[in-house]
Picture 1 (cartoon, rainbow, N blue to C red):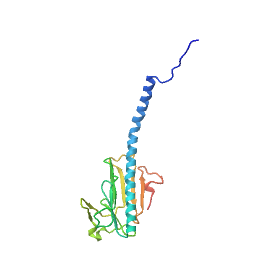
Picture 2 (cartoon, one colour):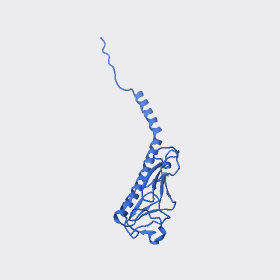
Picture 3 (cartoon, rainbow, N blue to C red):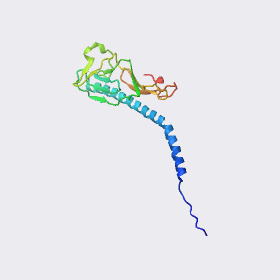
Picture 4 (cartoon, helix red, strand yellow):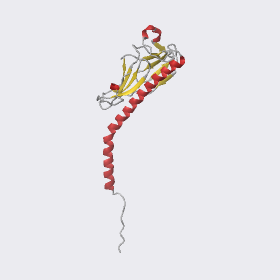
Length: 196
């Protein structure tokens, strides 16, 4: 009787075919993966801003005084206890990347001011001393036609495959974060279908 040995395993050719197929699959998914990372970053910025607005309102109610949230052009924000403060009490440091854009409504608003009842103050011009908050190393200019009503975080190149994220702020201080779908559909978290 002949002793027959059966070899188990992969040949080098079979191994290279599998590697080639996996390489093609990875190359095909890389653009989607980078878009997913951008989308997650946009959501993180929006959630950070929404959290900042809720915190500012909470500080105003607890402290019984006006509280300011100042939004920077990169999506970071600072909360000040009142217009005479030289030190912020909280800040958000999640910023947009150079591939993203941020738009504020009204277009030149930078600030939300909450009164001691947690309601947004509309009349910025009644007290000119509220226009600038000075810090020892930096001046935070909080002037704006204000208050901020809506913040849209999108892509700088206007890519239609990634939806914008919006932060909507009501007069009473409620905050809503939603997705602004490029294609108008009836999904429940579509900004077009949400009313304050």
